[in-house]
View 1 (tube, rainbow, N blue to C red):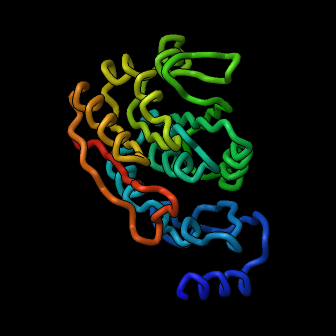
View 2 (cartoon, rainbow, N blue to C red):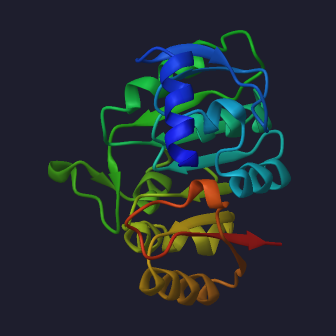
Amino acid sequence: MQEAAKRAVKHFLFRRGMRKYRIRGGALSGLWFQFDLHQDTQAWRGIYEQPLQRWLSTYVKPGDTCLDIGGADGYFALLMAKLSGPQGQVHSFEPSEKIKYIQQNFALNQGMPLAPLTRYGSYVGAEENPQMKIVSIDSLVDSGKITTVNVVKIDVDGGEMDVLLGMARTLERFHPHLFVETHSHKLQEQVAEVTKQYGYSMRLEMPAAHELRPGLDFNAFYLSEK
């Protein structure tokens, strides 16, 4: 009943389609972004994935190089750019059509002191495969396209282990702060095992009730602590 009432309010207040709005709360408060508020208002209100917002605000420092693996529309790439500032770097990976929104949302904030953005319309996996539009983080680091890594966020809806396997040398060399969203108990156990091998101290944090995804038996945030 409560969800039906929320949908009715959104239907009455907001038109369909993507439009620019100033974010009302959270770590991105005051910046501009495109939303379809007819569908969802969490990111606009600043209550979207609050554990990740808090974690990035704690660990991203000015000048850091950040990887947003599973960039979607660029919400967290924009937060990384805000926190790392003009001396930092943000590399965002998004293979879907949503990648167009990443650049558009950055452009809405032109003139703000943001880190420069590099976009990749590729999947991130265990090994580089240009024919399949797959890159690995190790291959990008080895080639010099990425020269250092300080903070990594991974949310690729089930392929998180492939991402980690493809950045083994990067984890060993730079030991970046690491955030992994997991979507099954088995995946959670696998991520726990591989991060332990690389000396990470991780903690588990569950999403808020309003963010639970229907149809998933498990959804959790796995965050490094240093």
